[in-house]
Image (cartoon, rainbow, N blue to C red; front, side, top):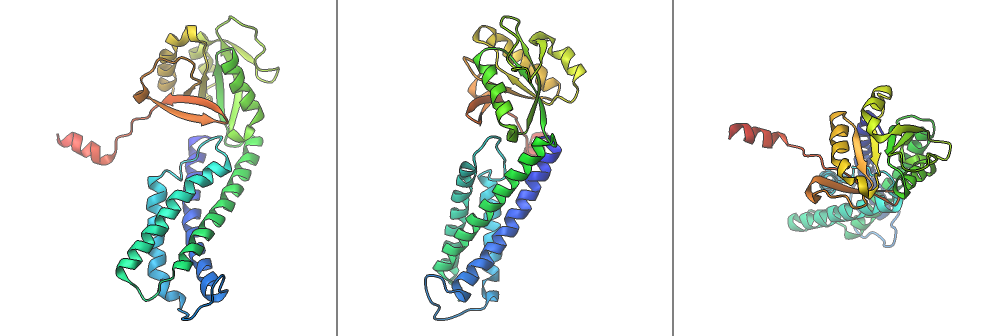
Length: 284
C-alpha cells in the first residue's frame, strides 16, 4: 500500500473506531436500560447521566489503542489476530473506566452496562475490520493502491515470496519481476513474473522502473555479505526493503521482524526522533 493511501486508511480507521466506541456506549445503554438484557432495571437512569463516562471512555480507548499500536495495520495478518490486538486495550479501557467511576462514585453506574460496552465495541469494530479488509482486497485486485515490488534472489526463499505474492493479492503487492545471481534456472516466476536480470543490475533497473517502492531480498547464504549493500541502496532510493532471513548476520537492534502470510521478514528498523527529543538535542 502506498504511503498516501496507508495514511488515509489509518486516519479513517481511527475516526471510525472512535465513532463506533460512542455508538457502542449508546447501544450498551439501550441493552441495559431499554431492552433490559440479562437483568431487569430497578432504578432507570437517563442517558444524560452517562455522558461524562462516555467522554472518558472515548479518551481511554484513544490512549490504549494508540499505546498498543492497534491502528498500525500489518500486512498478511488474519482477522482473528487483528481482533486479538483489539481485545486487550479495549478490556483495559473498561477496567480503567470501572476504577475511575468507583473512585468518584457517580450516581449513574452499572457494571453490567460495562460488559455490554465491551461486547458492542468488539462486535462493531470487528465488523468494520472485515469490511475494510474486503474493500482493500477489491482495490488490490484492481491494482489500486498496490506496492510495486521486486524480488531479489533465487532458491526456496525467493520462490516462497513469489508464491505468496501470487496467491495473496490481498497483501497489496504487485510483483513486477525478479532478479537472481545467475546460478539457477530463470523460471521462478512461473511465467507470470518476468526475470529482469542479475541482482547487481538493481541500480539501473530502478531507473527503468521508477515506481518500484518495495524490494524483497532473498539471496542464498553465500551472498549474505552483499545484503547490507543492497539495504543501503534501497534506503538511498527511498525503497522499503524486506529481507527473507536465512543466516543473515545483522545486529538485532538494527532490524525489525515481521510476518507476511507465514513468511518471516526482516526490515531495517526506522529510527524516529520525536519533536521533544529534537528540542532537547538542540538545547544540549
